[in-house]
Amino acid sequence: MFRKKNKRTTGKRGYTQERLAEIAEIEPRSLSKIECGVTFPSKSLASIADSLEISLPHLFEFNHIEKTVDTMKDDIRNNLDKLNSEQIKVVYRLLLSMYQ
Image 1 (tube, helix red, strand yellow):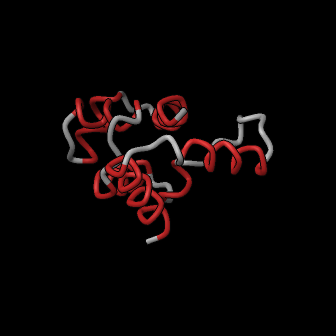
Image 2 (image 1 turned 120 degrees about the vertical axis):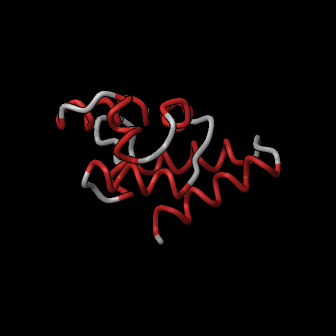
Image 3 (image 1 turned 90 degrees about the horizontal axis):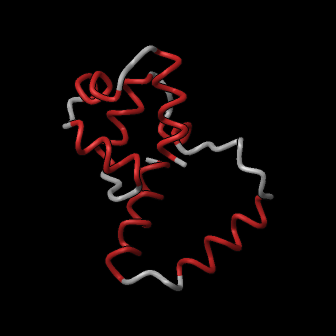
C-alpha cells in the first residue's frame, strides 16, 4: 500500500523513483525496500516526506482503503501477535517516527 501511495505522490510531482531517491539522499534500492515494506528506517522516511513536501504521517494516509478504522485496528491487533520480537521493534520504531 505504501508503494501505491508513494507512486501517486511522486507522480503528482513528476518524480521518478530514482529522482525521489536522489532528492531524499537515499539509494534507489533502499527506497524500493521501504515502498515494499521490507524496512522502515525513520530517518529515510522523514527524508522522503521532506522531499515530497508532505508530513510524515501523510505518507501513511490511505484514504482509498475501504475498511473501517475499527476493522483496521482489529487487523493490527491480530497481526501483532504473529510478529517476532525484531518485527515488533520495527513496528514500534515506525509508530514513533510518525509522531516525532
